[in-house]
Length: 255
Image (cartoon, rainbow, N blue to C red):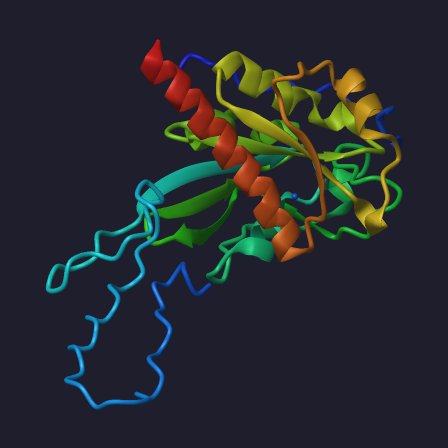
């Protein structure tokens, strides 16, 4: 991971934009009706059913009584992509704590250098990173690190990627070229990643099949559509990242 080069962004021309998812279960027994006919000694009532336990292997069983619960396993996930694609919004939408952001006001010095696109009303930019976390269950907790999108902060990506289990590359379908450096970075690093196409205003400029072709990513790389403003949509995208990372870890263990 330490030898991976930081991403290289294409230089955008000044003043322009770069082209571009019970009863049986709980052991309940039917009650006994009233005794009819000759009185006879009643049998002892059946023992109460045992408490419900989920199937083994789910990782959600309760600890034995008197033993403190083990803390959840921390998992580091990167949220990466080009400038103004919705990385900060993604982290903020899902984080269970107030997200740490390093937003600074954009100034006239960034005109022609930091271009968020014609559809964006963005007035701030991330100058270091975003941070948030979300608990998946009692055994797993995701720590989200959002990378800066500008080329001048590319040197930070190596440090942010160290120890990460996977990455979500956020893409604006109207500006696909902005995400090329991020995809190149994770392919060189060998880090499992998922491409999440942020549906601005609920619409995509291109179909997912066309986006996969334009990005030149293989079928083994998941490509999903999500809304960076919607918590459940972000959750589903992160679960795909987690599944992809666990699949890679399982295959590496068997090798």
